[in-house]
Length: 198
Image (tube, rainbow, N blue to C red; front, side, top):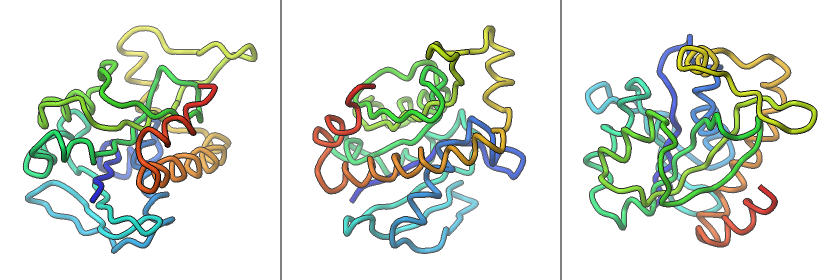
């Protein structure tokens, strides 16, 4: 059983923000697989959908806490390193070009508050991350990252442009294919396949 978690903030006002690209990608996986309707639990502060992706059992998780408390929903679910290795986290990465997808395992958090919360809660970094790039680039490919903490927060909580949302359809096809590959072929094979040239 795999656990696939999309990081984001709850509330309609955050739905199309850059910081919520992980939950948008999670919705795409939900649509691509055979999953139940979302079931939300106010006490556990999660919305969950159970089912299969490419014939492999998986549970999709959307924390309904704010981003920096996302890990608390995993405390009772991911109780060992072995279970942590079955966890896949989809999230926005300001250090990656817009629309790019990269898989990472057992790495630092890069200062991402949602990842920080997960590591604190499950007490290990040994889980798979699907890094979804949200930062535009110059024509030469250089990242146009905002400078300073306030600018970064404003950027991440800013909404995608309509054109970007359309372009993200391809990105979400890639994230779904990458997660499917992890479930069916294993982590190493998926990383070899989807991290080529990135």
